[in-house]
Length: 384
Image (cartoon, rainbow, N blue to C red; front, side, top):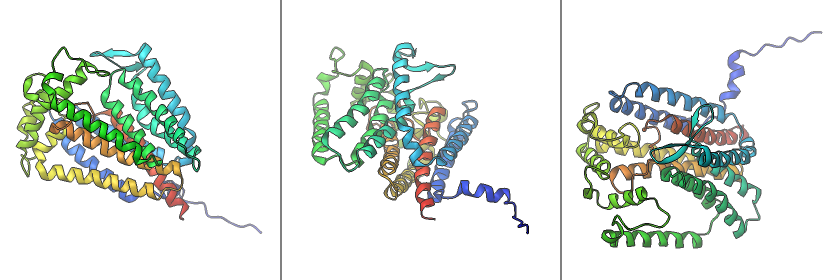
């Protein structure tokens, strides 16, 4: 007796691939991408193909998100050590054989020109999450010290390039993992106190410390100039302070409701430098005003909150640490970019996710969101 089986349709075959995707996260990401594309159409209108290029970058990031979401967290954990090791190796190769532009050696030619430091934005948190997963249940102070060493190695190599912005992002992503792993507040508070004292001393002795002949230990001259320009941008309004001053003018001139789509005078008369990249938020705020700025902040808060919810429901320590680190990294990106554009933080070249133009940044963003989606899917599929 023969038994006939119905051949599954192609829709039935594809269904398992899309099962478990976190719909609130997808909705938030799509809304943020839409805001970014609308802004890029306006600010990049006379910048050639910036809008179409950014649309391509977003589609590429979405494709990477989909691919990485298919990889279970256990498999991602097994890739942590190779990715971290490969990234550090490329950073060392960059220091020896790298391409130098404008005094910075940040790029490496491997057939195509790449910026290896971008790998460590994902690789460093992966490595630390792997380390704490291996030490789960038997964590000692020495384990946190070892984690600090693993984090400081790539940070030091990136600072040497020099690239303060990327080093800050790698450092913050790794510190979030260490914090979520259980680092004691008794160790965190003294560092915060020392930082507050240092900032107070710089502000209090600004006139003396910002003299051209005064060297700041461990910092390059351009990094010192960024801090001093932040404290008083009017000392060089047409030079080092130009970016900050124009950014503040654009944000302030937007008012409550903004000047309207494609009506930003500071933007389209090209007073805002780097208006499609680092200072895209200034151009956005000029046209969309306080209301648009608040809407963008609400979007980032929703993304961070949803990521932390996914972290709280993750099945393993590795997954919880990665989801928590990725979620709070969005806070770092948004806070640093908006802060530097608004004149409350030094200009360090940190892009604003979804809003700033950039292929490499969108690829990194797609990978990070893919990992977050993978963790969400692992929880959803386990509950089925």
